[in-house]
Length: 637
Image (cartoon, one colour):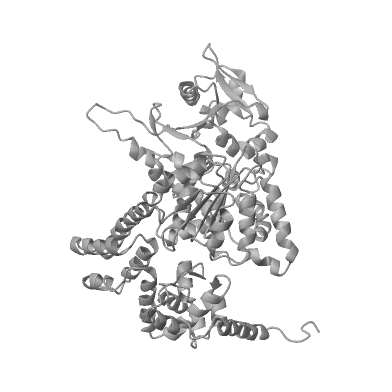
């Protein structure tokens, strides 16, 4: 890698460094002039005498700013790459993302943004020019914006405008790039098509660059073939991106980063004020700073916000640029841990392999954070998973665990072997209640805007929530969902709200009673029965095969989705797959709730007039009917 350095005689010269010996450096991001000959090139630098070119101003700016930041070396693409060498150009394009990622500072020099004021009485107008700047419309600047640890923006006068954090909302609004990507979150957490869309409207000098400029965004490399055309370049890029998808799909049943984002979206977004309290607790601080406390157990009742706490912790760890982060949610997942029922030796081999990975010497100076949410919702082989956690929570493993669950004796006894560092949400009830209040203010504010409540109605609804939420996030979310019903008139909102009792079990009873009044209540009951019994989330196509549907309903996807919507207090539909809103909802329907009142028993009996064995038999027999329509004896005969 070549780097620029300004000498004591105020001249600029190049130094080539081996990969292992690259010193700290600053890097410049800019837009090339429409007249490329105006840029200060590699040839100009080696031949000398071209510092009068207009493009040399960028070099001078970068040298000055790097010096102010205490950096001796800096890099500018116009003059650090010998483009006459196709081999060097190929290497540079493949390495570009890493070079920006490794830079100590990235300076964005915006030649079309001026901070000059005509007179002292005129407010600066650079913000509008910043928002319309062509830098946001160029192809290569996408990876420069995302890759660098620190991105600072400067006007053409060299004045500091802000950085990627302080200007984050403006950048998000202009580019459509999620704030998480701008804050350094792992790019694999964003879908392939979403990342492709970030470059959709950006302009490139060469058509092929539309594909080549995405190498770093997808962490792939393909040969540079200018002249092949945009379509062929993209086809090769997609082939390279998708090359390992089947392998990854075999290694995991779901992408936990996608699951995290799906859960946050389903819950209305992640509010920092609703989780930040946990970062200041002695338990979390001790876990984070001490090598003697490698396991933190967050325990609490259903609906208290354990999942969102972990989502917030993950975001904080991401901001700290941790070297490894694995996040797995046990709930609502296919039961991969119980594969031993088919191959008894597989689980042992898997445990040995994972243990060996965690002992790898490369992890010696790179601690890995492993996070498991809803440990109590692990369907089978919970003891085996607990054994892995306890075994790897001490030296020589450089692993730190965070797990969340309800307070189960089985879990408590196992984890007590290696840690007493437990964060109980019940013992932090005041902090949880304050976080729930923040959530209430946010949700009611959003609901008020959507429903156009007057101030009196808004305050009355807000007061009812504050009095009845009992520190339970899920109660707030479910009741807000009910109030958001388009058919509920504002004049009747408060009266309807007052029919919602405090407590999750009581709320579930009311919701069951509401479903009983629907025209298709029997169909809703059957869907709930099957969804609660199956071992994994079930798709719309599968539910139509297992549950007997009215004539014509299977051919009307929107009507079927409407039926699922009638069960919306318990179920949610995402990507044509049916999920429970939370494990506590499933537990209620399976009769595991604590409330034994007459109303609960009535609701339970209505919900499941069939016992679990009968529901399983129904699933089996209906599935066999579907298979029998295709299969026959001696099918290959």
